[in-house]
Amino acid sequence: MNTLLSIETRNAILLKMAVLLEHEREALIAINKTDLDAYKGDDISMFDRLKVDDAKVDEMIKSVTHLASQEDPVGVERFSFKHDNGMQIYNKTASFGAVLIIYESRPDVTVEAAGIAFKSGNKILLKGGKESLRSNLKIVELWHEALKAYDASTNWVEYLQFNRTETQAFLEKPTQKVDLIVPRGGERLIAFVKQHATCPVIISGRGNNFVYVHKEADLDIAIDVIMNGKSKISACNAVDKVLIDENLPNKDEFVKTLISKLKESKIEVLGDDIVSKDNGLETIKSDDIWYKEFLDYKILIGEIASNQDAIAMINKYSGGHSSSIITSNDDEAKLFMENVDTAAVYHNASTRFTDGGQLGLGGELAISTDKLHQRGPIGLQHLVTNKWYVHGNGQIR
Image 1: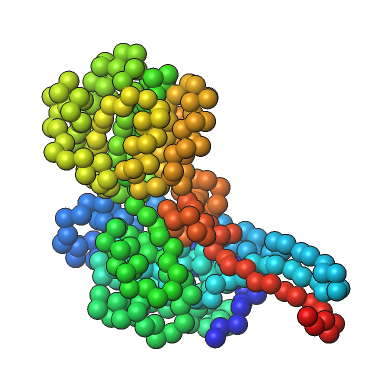
Image 2: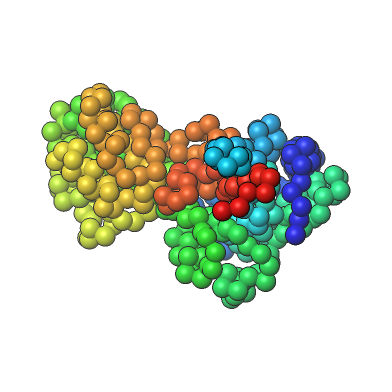
């Protein structure tokens, strides 16, 4: 068992990691290029997430530097109580112990998610995808160098080079202690982990996010929010579905403008029966497509009768991640935001802000679509459990 490192040591290791990432920037980008060149899949979103360039390295450095500046999430008092018998009782945050992060494609997870788990006092087990193996091993090498610089065991960050069969066996019967598993990737990966894991799993769920253009929408805002929602198709906070209020003034003109702008950005536009008939679009063949997260240059536009109907539709089909209403009516926005069952709800703003850094957390381990123990972006302060501390002088019950 690793004894909890002091907050000073944890912070020093994170800052050392920032220095090493800068020093090894060119080497990391070159190694990542070998992963990119070796990738033979046709998943454009996975390829996009696989890439490490200067901007990605900058984000990694910013992430660990910011983590080092944040308060220690461990040992924070949440509750205190003085018992009638004189016992003093405290409830304080505590680290989980060992966190396994299973992820696809993204080498930045090896820095950012691991950094959050490490700062929270946890041992990190990393199981990345084969497509990013060289990049991940290089980053883990830097973690070990940072740990050794402060006489900390390299066991704090361990990379598991398992194939699918070995991963399944480890999930079902771990050969070492695992207290929490965080899968980061597509629906198949998440389903695989849920099926085989024998300890708690934080579900970093699918996106399939909706924008509802209410009849009292500012149409310029609506266009901007939808186009921004499609600006990064590999992100789980991207927009896949747009609902247009049937009573929107100048509806036909707005829809034609929106479709034109989407097509200019090389985005394939699908429509429900009404929208496709009026605009010469490909009609959807089954309502099942409303459930689908695209992760592609694709969007589906439909017409809806009211705010209540939009809420019902989103609650039926969305991934529980993010949704946005475009309206100048604050009461309608309130109705939507209180009743839509997604982790993040927006009024006149883009779903692309569902991100730990953008929502003020400094970074995120994952974006949870579960309701326990934390929903939405999971930041440093959320990656803790709790423990009861009871001080007495011989009390018995």
